[in-house]
Length: 309
Image (cartoon, rainbow, N blue to C red; front, side, top):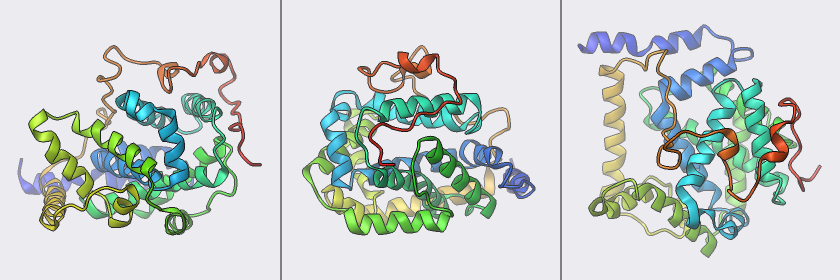
């Protein structure tokens, strides 16, 4: 394929996004962004967003006490990604989207999670992918994409019963930065959960490569996050090399590769956990039965238990 042909086709989805209205078409726009334009970048940005949660001791302490990262880390990772995919891929207000959020509320309802932590975690899932894509995507996000991501994040928060949600992307970004400046702090629980999460990634590779992949994973983190997680500083040459490699990757995509076809959206590969497929009720801690939610009206979305009103 020539550079000219690849380059022309590369921007076909962007032209489609430019013609859509993010106030109405936000589901379609986020689908194009997350599952066609930037699937790998979106996953990486979201994964780093999950790591940011562990820099807050009150969040990492709860995650550490559940023991899920040490006991079934791959399943927890797959479940988190799949619930998000189920909530968004059909439209956040579709029956499937409502069922996924209801299921998520049922899982969270077992814990007394304060509203400010919900707000922060939502902010990480928006700001994390946006910042990663702007840095390492083949192009920066279009304003329609940013608005659509923000609208879907806010709607997800509303369905979860979260109060005092930010109104704009800039407000979410400010919330995240202010929260981390106030609450990022090294703690043994932060490190335990972070190391368990890194092990999920390194276990995907042959044993001789696992040490290198651990270093690469840590090198992806910004310094305030790395310090809060209690992880070792990586060599400057590795950080620079990784940054350069990701920028070269973006340039190759921009110049040579066509967009993912409309009939081939990205979907998370969860075969390590679910080799024969999954149902929504499979997702989440094994000990939390989904039976009390299965027959409920999918438009009835409970407020998470113990959330301040």
